[in-house]
Structure formats: structure tokens, C-alpha cells
Amino acid sequence: MAAQPGAAQPMAAQPGARPVKVAAVDFIPAWGDRDGNIRRLVQAAEKVAAAGVRYAVFPETAISGYDFTGPAQLAPFVDTIPGRATEALLPLLRRTGMYLSVGIAEKDTGTGLFYNSAVLLGPEGIIGKYRKNGLNGQDVQLFAPGDTDVGVFDTAIGRIALIICYDDTYWQYARLAALRGAQIIGWHSVSDRVMPGTPPAQATSNHSTVASVQHMSALNGVWVVGATRSGIERNPITGSQLFYNGGSSIWSPEGRKLAQAPVVPPEVLPPGLNTFITSTIVPAAADPVRERQLGRRRPALYNPLLALRRAPVDVTATRTPRRAVPLAAAQWPEGEARLASAQPQPGELLVLPELSGLPSDLAPNQIRERAEARGGPFETSLAARARAGGGYLVGSYPERDGTRVFHTVVLAGPAGTVLARYRATHLSENEQAWASPGEAPLVVSTPLGRIGLASAGDLAVPEAVGLLQTLRADVVAAPAGSPSPLKVEIDPRLYAVPDPPTGRADLHPYLAAKLGQFWLVSGGRRSGAGTAAGIFGPEPVVSTPTLTAAPGADAVRLRTTLPAPGTWINQQQLIDGQRNDLYGPLVLDATNSCFQSWRRASHGQTRCP
Image (tube, rainbow, N blue to C red; front, side, top):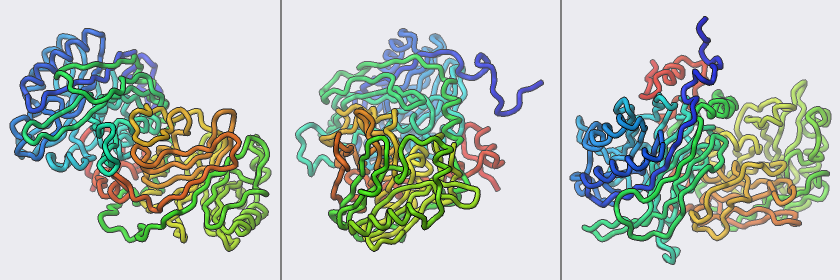
């Protein structure tokens, strides 16, 4: 009897069931030396294959370099697919059995347009290519917007998707890869930095794109092999320079770092292979992790919001910045609630830990037993505490509505009234044991700015973050419980801010703030050396360090501007750069016939009538 679609297969029959060694390769092209770079690329691939690597990822624009002033200057150094680079590499791959993906400045043979592309090659030949969709300020000077969606390519070692550099500023591209069944994402980058000691006014582009890659694995349940480069690239015509400091990395489907190349000061390095890092993975091990992640999606909530083109004019957004807005995240120890003593400072937004009127160690049935209706003791007490302090107070409670119980987040204002209620829509595994999901996201206008309400569980689902961004939240209040075991693991040397969150901050609120480009305030509990109480900025690489509550403190506080003005990017720029024409599958249910056609196709857009 044939297996039913979606039914579990024996591990030996699954694509990617065998362990494979993967590598992220730090390859340094010589500026404008296409033929020499192709020769050195083959030599590098030979050395990587000799180390037993089955899949190797090389950086972006690896045969041309990246620092060009415009298409005319780049034109002598572009390649085609198939072309010179693929012709040189394929004999080696047929002989060694290795798979390889590499970034190429590609000229389309039909139109003459240039694309920032990556091509996947293997023993069987050219398997597929991807043209970059998330174009940054340098890309738009050189390349047309990509005309491929995010494809997933079947190979003998597993299902591979390709993504390029600044694509990881957006949550959508890795999500599309996961929805199509990717097991591995190959990420190709040239992540540049300004030199140490650069005056702050000239350092606003110090963004280090490689400091974003953790979200692709953690939110989607896929392996990520991320390759970037080191060295200094100099354009001999203009004298301009780009500075790279390495940091290639490999990540597990759980969002854990498996290997990383050193982060080094930029220096002039010889072209060719600099170094590579490896890890042995089982690609199919991503499948159950990915499907658990995707199982929390609520497509009915996303359609049509996540497919709307909300740029360049969006009347929803806050137009007048509010300066010196006070934000605070309360920190409570495990055990009893401290709602009776919680009080915001005048004009402050104070966010309490989740289930703010209950002890932290209740079982699901005990939480349900203590559920109460709207307007009950919890809401009355929260509103009274907000009025006593003359500020805004956010907490959550189990709300009973007939036979159902919701995890409801409440915003009370300085007049002692409830301003907004939000029923958590994307429930964590713990919440699912006692709560029913809510039916709509919520962002409300206040004198402080546009405040979005969320639960900690929502923050682990990128579509929920996308809804808050689309509704133009300036700050998100997200009560949390105990600290999460999943932390920010990005190397602190990739940051410009003085207080990077590596090793301390919970990952999901950090990612939500960065991907949504809003401030996020999360009240939470302290347990041992860890805390879930923090204030997370929208641009943690350059200007907004993550602030977590110190041991013994009752809160962590900050005054800031809403909405965040941004440095190299802000929420408006992020929305402007979205490719909503590619996002259709994000809002479709898995049973939708168009979605099923799109997933079966593996690559290429499916146009439904």
C-alpha cells in the first residue's frame, strides 16, 4: 500500500536521512578579476571537498567582488548561469560528489539585466538558482529585484533553499523556504562593517548582516549554513573600501550555534580560500522541528494583512515622534504575584510578568480554575494600580468566556480604565494546555504611541510579529513567564552597541523587536542567573542595546523615542523593501489548493486563478 501524503516515512527512506558534513566557506575574491576568481574558487572547492564536505556554501558575489558604483562598472565581471563559473566547477563536483552553492553577479542572457544570484550545483549538474529579493542600498545600485521566489531544491543529501545576505533582514524569505519543506538554508553574504574608531555619525551603516542569521533557524526549524567573508575590498577606480570581519556560522533547527568562524579585524588578505568551518548534520532531523514550528501558524489571521502593500504611504503609522517615552519591564522572582504593589511611574508604560495575579508554579488545571470574566478582580486591580501611578500598566490573566478560557493581555491607562484587551493568538505548548486561541492581533493608539499587545508565545511565530509590524506598532508589550533556555547566541563582536545580549537575553523577544522594528517590553520572572524581564530595541546591532533586569531589581527602565528613528533601517524602510508580490503562500492555509500546488512545485511561483 502506498504511503499517504504527509505520512511519516522510515528514516532510511526520507530525503536527507544520512549524516552529511557541511561547510561555510570564507572565500575572498579579488575585485574585478572574474577569471582569476573562478580559478581560485575551483581550487578552494577542491580543498573543501578533500575534507569530506558534502555541501559547501560560498559567499555572495564570489567571482566579481561587491564594491561597484553601478552596472556599467560591474558589467565586465558578471557571469551567466550556466556560464564560466558553473562550467569550471561541475567537473570537480561530478568527481567528488560534493554539492556547492555560490553567489554570482549574474547577467540574464535574455534581458541583459544583472541579478545578485546564488546557484546550487552538484554531481548531477546545475540544480537551481535564486535571485536576491531583499535588496539593500548597495544592491539597488547594481541589480534588478529578484524574479525568482524562494525555491527548495531536492538533492541526494536533502532539500536545500538558497538565501542571500540582506534577505535575512526580513523574516519572510526563510519562512517561505520552511513552508516549502526546506531542511537546509544556504545563506550567502558579504557582511561589511565600518572600521573601529569611526566617528558615530559615520558609523550608522555598521550593521553586520551576519548578526541576523540565528532567526532563520530558530523560527523555522531548519539547518542554516551561513557563509560570509573576511578582509578588505578596495575599488581601485574610486578608492572606496568595504571592511569584512568574518563570522560565518552553522546553526541547528533549534536555533543553536554549532560552529562559527572567528570574527577578526578587517585586514588586507590574499584572494582565494581564507578558511572554512564544518559541522556534521542529519538534514532530515529538521523535519519534525520544522513541522512543529509551522503547526503554530494561523493563516486565517494573516489573510490579507500580510499580503498588503503598505508602502510608501501608510496612514496607520505614527507621524509625530514622542520623545523621552518611559518604558519599564517588571521583574518578579518565581513564586507569588506582586500585582498589589505594582505601580508605573507617571506617564510610564510598565509591563508585568504574565498571569500577573497568579503564582508562577500553577498547573494548567489550576490556571483554568482561577480564570475570571472581563471586568473582574484582576482587571479592576490592574486599572487601580495604573491610576495610582498615573501611567500605563500591562498584565495578563486567564479570562473565562463561557466554556472557553483565553490568555488575555490587558492595557490599563492613567485614568484607571481598561484601554485594550488582547487574547493571545499563537499559543505556546504550555498555554495550549489551558487556553483557547484568540482571533485577532491588536495595536492601539495612545498618547505614548501605538502599543501592540502580545504574549510571549506569540513572539516565537514570525507571522505574529509581521502582523504587529504591518499594524505599525511603535512598542509591543509582551508579558512573559520564566526565562527561556533559548538565548541570543550571536557573537558579541558582531555588534556595535556597548551591551550586546549574547548569553543573557531570551531570543524570541530580541528577534521580534529586530524583525518588526519596534521596541519590545517584556515583564518576566527571574530564575537563578536568568531573567525574562527585558527591554529590546529595534536596532540592536548599532544603537539599541538589549537591557535585561539586574539581579535584585524590581524592573528595568529606559526613556526612548517612539517610533524608533532607526539608523541603517527603521520600520518604514523595512516595509518599503518588502516583496509582497512573493508573500501569497504566507497567508494561505496548508489545505488551500494554490498553496499545495506551490509547495509541490518546489520552486517557481504558482499563479492561481
